[in-house]
Length: 247
Image (cartoon, rainbow, N blue to C red; front, top):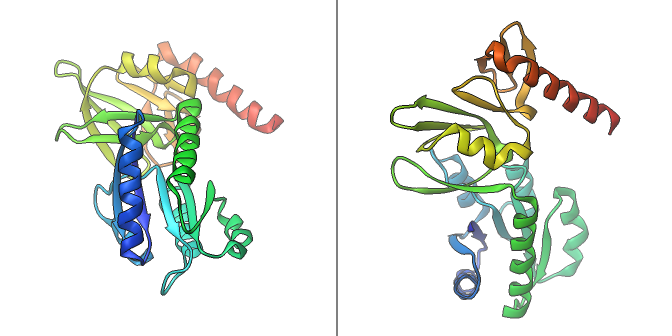
């Protein structure tokens, strides 16, 4: 498993110490950790605005920083960039804990931070992702490893079957890689990915409606549906609607 972690704190020495602690944890666990450091919330938001921005699974965020505090930065990230990222707040002052609940943080760490406390947190995060099985890793055409949350995949498309070229259409980007649709259908079929045709499998949660022989996605994309796959697709889509209504 690979995790991309953002550390955001105006204390450079603390960030360097935390990075070393994460490296130590990575060496004694089964997690490959990549950590980026940001001295301000503004710098972190700028990174999210970059084209092909790295996707973080965890953000370790100081609450008390000059300018916008960590809670407002977390709110911007959750609302505008990535709702599923795990936010871990870091603070010297426990009274901030109640305020932080408004952005649904994963955890709250109090400074000074010990290696035992961090190890316990990382063990919990590792268990969370392994149990939810929402993370996958793919190698793109430019040989970059991407760790992505499957809930952000809108659909997967086979661009060229001869060269086995696939395009992962995300909510905010496309990632091209090599592989087969059949592999990914088997790998994530319990996460409501359904074939539309021989060249596309779609995430049910992004279907807006089905019309004739095509589906309209919440992203505005329109995808053709083969006669062979239409009944199964419609049945699964209707079952999802009924399930949401019952809940």
